[in-house]
Length: 179
Image (cartoon, rainbow, N blue to C red):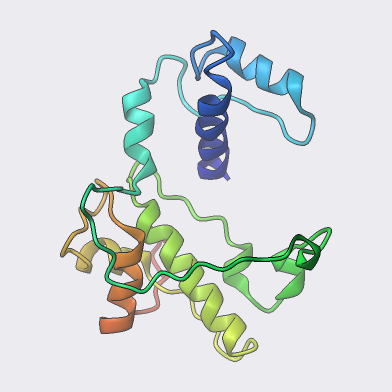
């Protein structure tokens, strides 16, 4: 949840920063966000004087110039009429424990591994119609997927998927767990 709030705040700060003269982590900025929307409440997740460089380091997903993904990327066009009014994956696939999990990468810039392991765990459960409910280890991705990855200093999402395809991933739970 903290990672989602952080990501939402950083994304919103980029959109609003051109027109709002507040520092993205100031109380004024948080108050401004809360004044223009009502679906959620912005708040402070880090000490007041945390640097933007520290926050950016936690994002973890690298975007290297010249990086070539090892997996095929497909683009799809979806007709707007196809999308449902509401959708909650937890209700659609209640047998999937991993969809309901809130993962915490702590102060490790491991979103590339944490998000990939979560999505892989979800896909296994959904594809097997709940027969396999394993939680794949993002720790393995952080420790073993090292060709272009930098562990807690970031990595590339496609490489995590390529690693899974080529080597498999053990079960074991989320980052920093004892599962």
